[in-house]
Each structure stands twice: as C-alpha cells, then as structure tokens.
Length: 291
Image 1 (tube, rainbow, N blue to C red):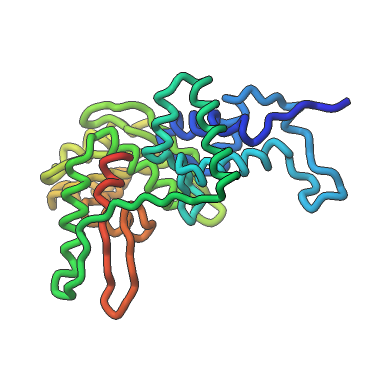
Image 2 (tube, helix red, strand yellow):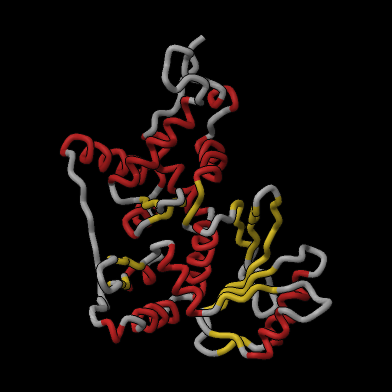
C-alpha cells in the first residue's frame, strides 16, 4: 500500500514555525524532532525509507525532504545556517511568520518557484564599522558592544541561545523571562562521553554585574543542577568573580561583554573577518537589530 508523504515544500512553513518556537535558532536534530510534529507527520510516514537500490538506503524520506525544505528556505532568504549546522530565521523569514499560515505557505511556494525557475540567488548585505587601521584593530569590540547593548533584552536572549548552540550545546530551552536571580534557560553540554545540563541567565547590561546577581542565580539553580552560566554585555565586579568561584558553592561560569564579542567573532555571528596581513574585522550592526 502506497503511503502519501509530504513534499519538501509542504515542510517549509512548518520548518519556519519550528525554528521560531525554538527561539529563532535550532540545531538539525531539534528540527528533525519538532517539524514532523508541527506538520502532523505520522510515525508511519516517518518510517518510509529509501529502497536498497538507492544511495540513500535506510534514510527516512520525510527526513530527507526536511533537508531540502531547509535548503530552499535558505535559497529564498528565509533561513540561514552556520558552519556548525545551527539554523536561524532571517528578517525575510520573519515576514512569513507574520502572515496567515495558509497565506504564508502559498507565498513560500511561490518564492520557491521563483528560485527554481530563475536560478537566481539574492544576497543582501548591510555592513558598517569597517576597521582598517592596525592601531585601531581593537575598536571593533567597541562597535560590537554598542550594538549589543542597544538590543532588546529578549533579542539578546535569543542571540545568547544561538551562541550556546554554536558552541555545542543541544536541547537548549528558554524557561522564562524572569528577573534577577531567575533562570532564563537550560541546555545540555557534552564533554567527551559525559553530558550535563547547564542553566544560564542572559543580562543585557551597560554596567557591571555585582556579586548579589551571582548569589541569586546560584540560589535559583538550587535543586536543579550544579552547572551555571551568566552571559552579559557588561562586566563583572571583582566581588562577583570571587562569588562565582567561592569554595563550597557550585561554580558559576561568567561570560562578560568582551568574551561575548570574541565568541561572536569566533562563530561568525554578525561578524565578518577577512584575514590579511592585518586582521580586518567587520561588524554587521543590522544583524543585532533584527535577530
């Protein structure tokens, strides 16, 4: 008996919805779990595999079509992905989420038709703050920090979630937008054969984070886990650093504004690096205002 399967185009809108629900960015494994559920794909449909005569023998046809859905969403500019396989919604992709679902599905298929028939690729780049002078090579951090500190707190939280995914965290989940002392989310980090949950708090700060913030966060972690991480656009006072490593208390790792800049540069999130005799760093301010 032939089992009807969704086409890759049927999975395009559910893929956008899945990435949005996961906080604006998602790893492939997270999408392979979330998209079929959103699209109403049954276990029977997921179980349909390519035949032994195919080079894709043993692979689920639906999962394969989900790969093509991501590929064409990228071609039409609705999704983008990093080298580490983390997919995120673009400004263009957000427009489809603002539409009625049926309208969005139709619009995505029309955009896909345009890409496939005209074979054109559109690249939109908005770049400012280019640094050329060797003596000003560190100024890129000032430009980047200014962009980070002007972000909406929820946007900085989404950026932090994506940064954690780029760094290798999986099953990253936002738990709520609580105030000081609260936990913003949790992710699973694996080191060699061992994996453990890490709770995190994101603080878009202009000044310094005090020791009380670290104590409150550790208190919120009590009974949940022993690994904590605070990410901020600001800095940490000496007392906060001492509190984070206090003997007899679970350690809390601290990532300050300059560390965030270096990580964004490392994972090329809103930062372009052209390696010449002198390192040329470019900040895409538009990336941080639309995440």
